[in-house]
Each structure stands twice: as structure tokens, then as C-alpha cells.
Image 1 (cartoon, one colour):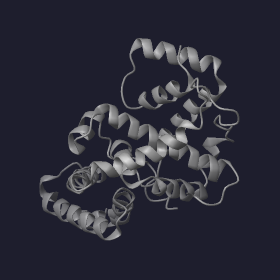
Image 2: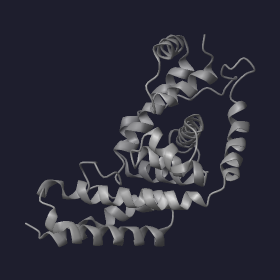
Image 3: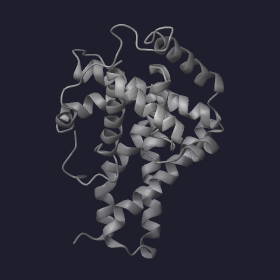
Image 4: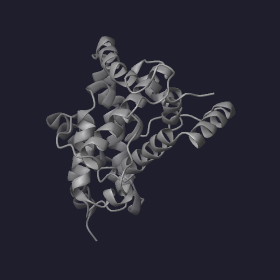
Length: 68
Length: 193
């Protein structure tokens, strides 16, 4: 059984490597019952989205009209 | 249609922004971008794919940034990274009880509508301030991963660090960024660091 501290590590690592099936299952189970880690996961995913849509990021579609 | 050199010139400020964010050194960023534009000019004849000009120029810039980061990191000592790690661990540990579960009141707060935030210009200013608040070496690894799209193997090779070390650094960076946004965008804070 994962605790929250371990869970936050796996949530981050999921963005950098494929988790093993055991890790995935443990994480899904933990997040299901832990609201704090659920938020942590959603917020980490949000960070990734933000970075991909950052105005300085080259693949962003709106390169000329977003200049904060 | 703009001639190719004009198109390159039009990319200048975007290239510069991208480089600055990663190098945190305006003069160096300007050098790398000029170098990139020069290389692009010289390669223009060989380049034919009209629509992908920007992608192509950015790929040149990315390669140059990796080179710069690589040479710079040779001079970064491991103890600097270790120091950043220790100070992070000290704070990180206070978030959890002895059994590893969230301590009272330390759980991530509920955020308003994150999608809505992205639409606001002010949000990007806070976000960039938060990026710049990351400790230098942590930030560098994070930018290599997220902005240069390098995978863990490549980062480890470039910086001579282990994969597990790399995961820890990236987690630390995301964690701090998350906390910074929570405090300064989704919460009441007004100072980025």
C-alpha cells in the first residue's frame, strides 16, 4: 500500500517514464481513496499542460499573438 | 510572402524568449540566438519545407542550447545540486506525517479553474516568475526535460547524473512550481519566491 509521500513521487515519475504495472495499480488505488493525492496528480498534469502551451514554447500555435 | 531572411528575423524575439528562460542569462541567450540565426541563414538553401521553417530554426536553437547547457554543467559542482536537494527535502518532509501521509493542513489546496488561468496574461507572468524561482541547477534539469524535450536517458548522459537522481530533481522542480503557483496565483500570495 502506497503512502502519500511515495505516491507524489510516482505521480511525478509518470511524466518521465512508463510506470510498471504494479506501480500503476498501486497509484490508481491510492489516488482513488486520497483526495490530496488526487489533487496533486491533477495539478502536476496541469503543469505539463501549461508548459506545453507556454508562449515561448516553439510548438505553440499562437506564436505571434501571445506576448505577455 | 515574406522572403526567408525576413521570416527568420520575425522569429528573433520568440527565439530569444525561449533561450532566456532556459539560460537565465540575457547576454548569453542573445549570443546563442544570433548563432542560431546565422546557422539558419547558412542552411537556408538546403532547407525547402516552407511551413516548417519555425520548427527547423527551433531545432537548431535547441541543439545549441543543449551544447551550452552541457558545457555549463561541467562547471557546476555536484555539491550545489546536493545543497538544493537538502533544502528541498527539509521542507518536503514537513508536508507528511511519520507514516508518509499528508500532515494536517498540508494537502494540496483546491485550485480554481486552471484552464481559465491559462487564458489570462497575468498568469503567465506569475508562472515565469515561479520558473525563475527554481534553484539554478534544479531549474536547468527541469527546462531540459520540459522545454528541450530531452528524455531521462539523454539528460543523464548530458549531465552525468543517475536516472534516480534525475527523477528526484524533476519531482522537486514540479513540486516547487506547484507550490509557487498555489501560493501566488491560486492563493493570496504576492511574492513569487
